[in-house]
Length: 91
View 1: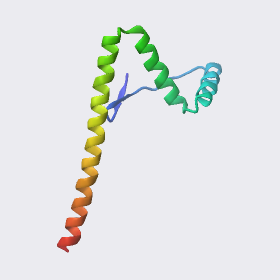
View 2 (view 1 turned 60 degrees about the vertical axis):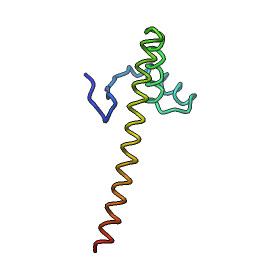
View 3 (view 1 turned 90 degrees about the horizontal axis):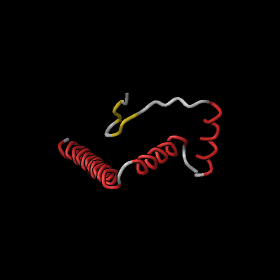
View 4 (view 1 turned 180 degrees about the vertical axis):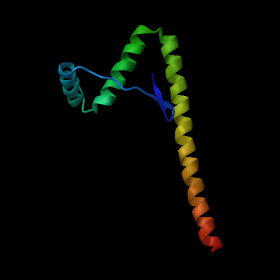
């Protein structure tokens, strides 16, 4: 079962050792961390097995959620800086 990590689903996957070595080789060839390589492989397989309309809709929803997450972080940092400035001015 997936655990939530922010807006993402976190899976713990066990991979047999010899195929894990193959994974490490492919990730190194792609200049990626193994988790990033696995993520791209999963996305590629999902894109292959689902109709493009279904996959593209899911991808578009993920992109909207990612942009919202980034916007919230930027707004949170700006608010934090403003609060610090107000504290300095009020002292």
